Structures are given as C-alpha cells and as structure tokens.
Image (tube, rainbow, N blue to C red; front, side):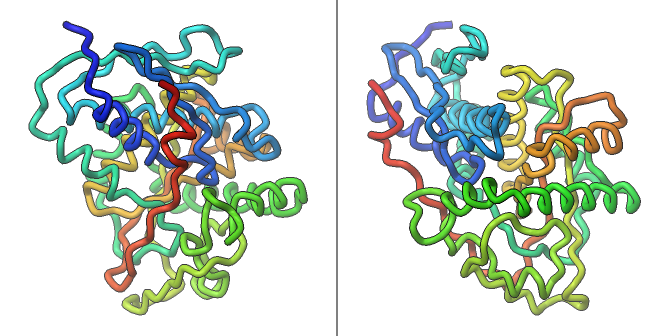
Amino acid sequence: MNITTPPTRTLHRLVELACRAPSVHNSQPWRWRVEDDRITLLADRARQLMRIDPDGRDLLLSCGAALHHLRVAALAEGYRCRVRRDPYGSSDNVLAIVELVAADVPTEAVAAAALIDQRRTDRRRFSSWAVPEHRLDELADAAAGEGVRAVPVTGQGMRRRLVEILSRASREQQFDWSAVDETAAWTGPRTTDGVPPENVPRRVDAERHADPVGTRYPSGTLVDDSDDHADPGYDASRLLVLCTDGDETTERLRAGEALSAVLLAATGQGLATVPLSQATEVHATRELLKREILLGVAIPQVVVRVGWRPVSYEPVPATPRRPLVEVLEV
C-alpha cells in the first residue's frame, strides 16, 4: 500500500463532507489538521456542551460520526483510510490520525458518499407504516461493520419501557435550568450554527401527535402536516440502541462511526432518522438502559429512531455548518 497525498482541493472536499456529520445540538465539536500524507481529527473542547455532556460522550460520538463520513468520502475519491484512534491517550485532544492510501473505488462507494448530502435529522412524527425487520437487520449489520452492536427494541413491552426511559431523561433535563439554558444557546434564530427553528417542529404539532419521545428544543417553525394517516396519534417508528463492550475514548469514537454508518444506511433505504442522546446523557437513565434494555451486558452509547417519512412532508432543510477556515488547519 502506498500512502498518498491527494490534491489540496480533494482534501478540502473530504473535510467538508466529513463536517456534514450529525453532532449533538449541531455543535460540530471538531477540528482538522492536514499535514502532508495525513489528516488529524481533533476535539474542539470549546464547543463541548458542559452541562449535558460533562464527560464528553456526545462530543466523541459526534467526532466519530465525522470520522466515518471522512472515510466514506475518501473511498469514493479513491483513497482507503488507515486510522489510528486515540493515538496519544484520552487526555489528548488528538482523537484520530488518518493516513490516505490509494485504492480502487468500489462500485458502491460513490453512491454511499452521495448519501452524506442527502441525510437529514427529521424530528417530526414518522408514518404509521411499519419498518420491516429485514431493514432493521441491515442497519444492525452497518453498525456491526464498525465493531458496534445496534440492538433493535421491537417487543411492545420493551419499546414502551424504552420510551419511558427516554421521556424520563427529557423531563430531568427540562427541570435542569442550566441544561435548558445551554440548549437554548444552541437553538433558535440567534444561533449562527446550532439547530435553527426551521429544523425543529412546532410545539403544537408535537403535542397534537403525542410524540412518544418528546423534543428537547423550544418550539420551532417546522410544520408537521402529515394528514395521510388513519390515526394521527400513532407513530410506527422503531428504536435501536447502539452499544459497546467498553466505554473508553476508542469505544465512543467507534460508536459515533457506527451511528454515521446506520444513519447513512437508513438514508439509502429511504428511512427518516433522528439520534436521541438524552437517555445516555443522564446518569440514572443511562444505567436503566444498560440494566433493563441491554440486560447489563453492554454500554449504551446512543438511541436511534428510524421510520418512514409521510409522503406529504416537505424536505427538512440542511442545518448550517462552520466555514472550512474555522475547522481546518493546514
């Protein structure tokens, strides 16, 4: 294998696509450094949400998702990534060092990279159409390819309990004024990145449809006009729990990479998705997830909600991204 230095414009394009990854509150807590034949991913601790994410789990998941986006984009350009995760230990801000190796472009690589620009987080109610089991199996396979388990919560009793855990986490954060203030700082019309109002459902729509997992954001302007359902209060979305054997920096990064893989695979299937991190941000509900949903055998990292988007929905707009000059050091 020959480590290769791509043209500058290619490197910029790879980083731009990596930055399309989802992140908690769209905080984009990453920086990139390009040095000859390598791209280094660094944590941007200044953008860590210190109240809801004091130990940096969400930050590492977000950066892991960006790392996977980079790998997908690079393969479509003819470069395979050789990755060293957490090379200097968890106390360092260097999260991964990526060496680009020239490679043939697999047939499916270009189509996979195209999904990066198509993926959206859709916080509206999903359709009453059921998601087939084989679709969930394909998403679980995507996570397994990154060394992470994605556990579909399909039984009615277990799903009901998981929704209760998610709702409890949301309530605890809503009564934590520091968490409320931190969320408000990353949402609304005054934020230059974060989550703008046009990406958040109107509160009246969420209440009308009895959203089973609630919303952590103030009321937005995104309209839920899904009138094509026999039961407007029913949502047939499915929930998956992404989990790892350990809980160190490398496992959290890999969980973020698996999250990206699952979201892109779901996008390719035509499914709508939204990551739900509330239950893993609150210690008590994270322990409930581990004990009651995962039976104590794995560490929960994030929950993903998937479902069919009603045909009447307008597309969700892309959320803003930081300019390349702010995140890329050459």
